[in-house]
Image (cartoon, rainbow, N blue to C red; front, side):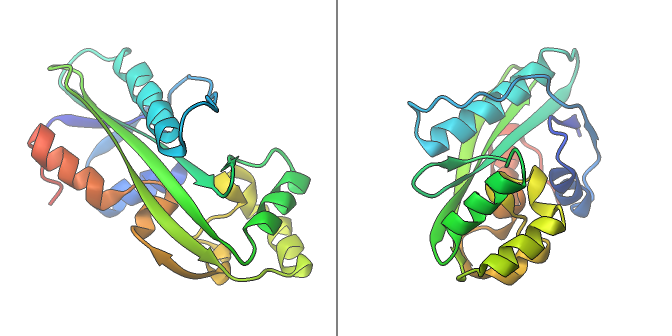
Length: 192
């Protein structure tokens, strides 16, 4: 099997791939994540994922498969990672009692053949109504500070989610099912 490279510093993406027992290395991208507000949310996620994968693939020479990903949360606007506790509070207040979309773009690049596939997945997430006390207690855990939309479904924020429609792993940060299909159908890599 070709050597897989995860072009992401995300510990959650690393854990998801490790959970599959897939051998891979991590090589973070150096790109500055700039959001082009003229693009749709899926296009933004795909573009950022592609930039990350391309940046890393340009540094490699050999038989590598590079996977880049970017996750964004959308409710009337794009919600990235909060800059501080106040912004985390505003994001969580906005999502409280609402349905929002989590979009993960991903890019797979074969460094030898130069084949590139870019795709995305969307999951609808239903948040319960959150009291100010719940929001503040959650922010005190520091958990929301490095996550798009100021929450991690796999952590304490699981208490906020009444249901989802779509891929749970997409909300965590990597749509495992769709990635597996792309790797199998376009790169002849089976993750089993």
